[in-house]
Length: 238
Image (tube, rainbow, N blue to C red):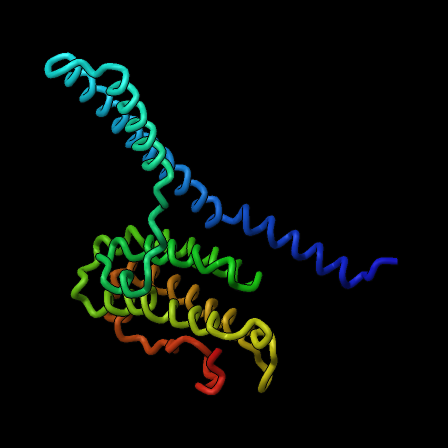
């Protein structure tokens, strides 16, 4: 008789994989990849068309191409077309780049960075990154109206480009066998989930305060992020 616990674990693993493929962030990432491919396809088409026109003009007004010229034109078209189609997609932004990004672009960059981290996180944390992605998409239009020199803008930038990456990077630096280990009633996995909950709540609060125009409250409220532990103390750092 099969081990019931192993069966449950296997079922949960399959369910997590399905969720990962059908989450809003995964769907958005697939859409971004598709649009990127279509953009490269367009560039490849125009590049090949340009080579054809250049070869035609050269053959008509300068010198006949001949068989060798015709062959070289086709080789150039194929190499150019495939090179453009196979050109790697733009990598996810780094936290350093995010920290320097224009404020209205920061939520999208943070969301792309978060998508790249998602596969390395435990399932509860993955679900929270999906929630955070929704919050990032919601707050993005509001940041277009926020003066980047406002103290409130600095708080938003700090949360997205510094504190969130530090939380996840700190977790990912741990060996996998230590991530579930419980010490003093908590574990790195649990701390990560708690920290991501704080980020999600902070983004909601920021969005509400931006909507209400209460920038002073946004800039001065005493948040605990230093985010990571909700009062557990620095010795609990993942």
